[in-house]
Length: 230
Image (cartoon, rainbow, N blue to C red; front, side, top):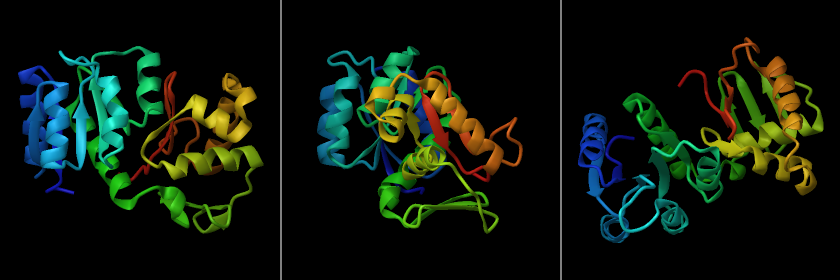
């Protein structure tokens, strides 16, 4: 996806320089902004494909920009020193495609950027008939999951869980979203339901359930469906 345009929004020149170097080596076109006002202007003028957004901006809290940016069809990857779970969940629930905390590994940022751009290019996976990760295929139209071509029997809640992850493959899906969508609003705090469902799915779909590489836990935040080959 080299050639995509990325807007880096951070008031620290050293961070912008680090990210610019890493993204530039991968062939991305980079534009920069040091505050919220410049970022919003750049989105209208430069029309980036994705925004790497710091939350601690001097003129406005970055969390307030997420919905504004997403409304323009742009992928948003938050890169912030804020480590609180509430901040991460709030950003993701507002539509951020991902959340990386500082200090960060540039290879991780590049992988998250690629995932966000893939999701933007291909659109919502809910509109696709099937999503494939490794040797597992989730057929959202037929409500069927196969592994290596063989149908895997899932309990209804297990299917609901994996289907929600598949619709946002590569992105973190928060605990609260999964519980509201699959179990209903009354169970939004019943995290044990998620742990049981994840454990069951890993036994059925992961090569080594003790070391999951496909259904990945983001501690205290949610789960992510990733392709082990990527």
